[in-house]
Amino acid sequence: MKKIAPSLLSADFSRLDEQIKKVENAGADLIHLDIMDGMFVPNITMGPPVIKSLRKTTDLPFDVHLMIKEPERYIKDFAEAGADIITVHQEASIHLHRTIQQIKSYGLKACVALNPATPIETIKHVLKDLDMVLIMTVNPGFGGQSLIESLESKVKQLRNLIKEENLNIDIQVDGGIKENNIKRVCNWGANIFVAGSAIFKAEDINLAIENLKNEVK
Ligand code: DX5
Ligand code: ZN
Image (cartoon, rainbow, N blue to C red; front, side):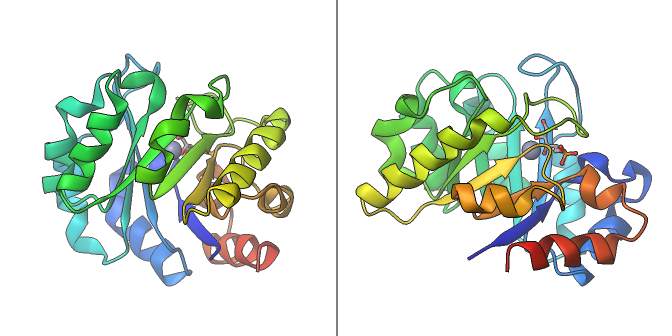
C-alpha cells in the first residue's frame, strides 16, 4: 500500500496542532516527526515532550525519525511519548540488533534508516526483524534539499532483496520528494513517501497531498 507521510519539519512550529489536523483532513497516512540532536546531524528540532503534547491532536500513526547519536538512550522516552514507528539510523547505533529489539519490546514498529552513503549490506542481517527500511534520499539534517537521483539503484536493490527473502517490509523514502518525482521513486520500489516542503510550503496543502497521492495511486 502506498502512503504519504508529511514531515512536520517544514510546518509552522508555532501551530503544529493545526498543521497536523490540516494534513490529516487532507488524507495523510502518517505523521513524520524529525528528531535531530545537533550531533548526528547539524540541526536541532524537538524531543519527547513535544511529541507527547501533539499525541492528543490526532489518531494517525506517529512515525518518529530519530537522527540522534546512540538512539538506544531514548527509545523508552519516545515510546512513552506516543510513537508508533521508531526509526533509528544504522550509522548511529553500534548494537543495531539490540536497539531494534528494544523498539519492538514496546510493541512498536521498528525501522532502520540508511544515509545516502550507507550500503544495504549493513542491514542485511537485521532485515527480517524490521517493519520498514528508510532510504534517505538526501543527506539528513534539513528540509528543502534536492533528491539524490543515484539512490535509484539502492532502492531497487532493497526491493529485490525483500522480494527474494519473501519479507513484508515497507520501503520509505525521505528527502526531496515532490509531485514531479514521486511516481518515479515509486517505480524504484518505495511505498511510503515522506514529504516536508512539498506539502507545508505549498500554497494549498490539500491540493499538494491530493496531487502526491494521485501520482502514486
Ligand atoms: C531530512 C528529514 C526529512 C525532511 C524532508 O533530514 O529527515 O524528513 O523533512 O524534507 P523535504 O521533503 O523538504 O526534503
Ligand atoms: Zn525524516
